[in-house]
Image 1: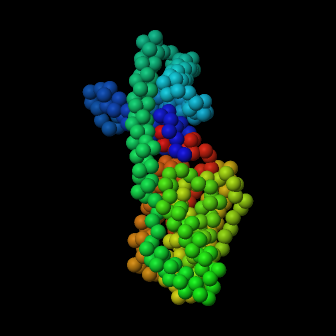
Image 2: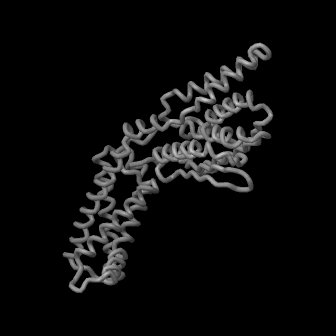
Image 3: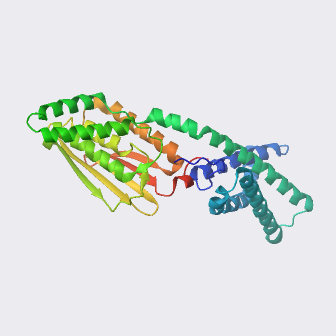
Length: 339
């Protein structure tokens, strides 16, 4: 399930980048506010670099500490979690200021007090911003968008599959029955309330059912090759990520070719990431390219809703093949998702 705590997720790369950008903007405004007569872009840039050199080390130290302690903070009630974040930030900033005073330049008491007051204001502004971000990606909004973005099966697939099954009813009734069962399972998943993650093994089985249905009408024109390392039974991914890509490969790569072709599916996992790679022969038929881009946009948006910046999708052409790669983190979703 998606993370529901309002505590900012300090193990999310997107959160770190947003905080850094926020602070860069604040430092830029502060240097403009403190500008002396004769202000110029060159002087402003110099002041900005000097100010960033003072504030960046404690900021990075604080973000590192929050990243390490995030699992502990996440278990706290919301108010207690905010208090822990504030306390940790003040302590690390105080230590940084003390180190600056000892090794670089002495600080007056007023300067030390000013640093802590600025730090408190910084914490309040950052937490407010991250809370707004969390609300923007609240479960209700995200789930509603996920429902609207779920991959939709193409009408032609339904009609073609039914025709293929009808042609088998008399000659191969057992095969026709198996195909209808596969179709029923496929449509059950497509019509389901697909909000939570599902086991990767379930998505693989769904793709195999889909391919067996398409095999009825494409026969030897459709070849599929799987390369899978040992898949953990607990490996979870968003639903309907792999199946639409396989459907794209059939629809855009195999079907337009009179001689057909081979779809190659690679699944590789390590301690940090799961890599899904699907390749199919390139087709010069232009009338279906829009549908292909729409499906990829759909999947990219759903990956972003689940994983923010932690998942990647790219497509490219290589050696006469069209390749789509998806990289998904294998860490628990509570350590990855927004907010």
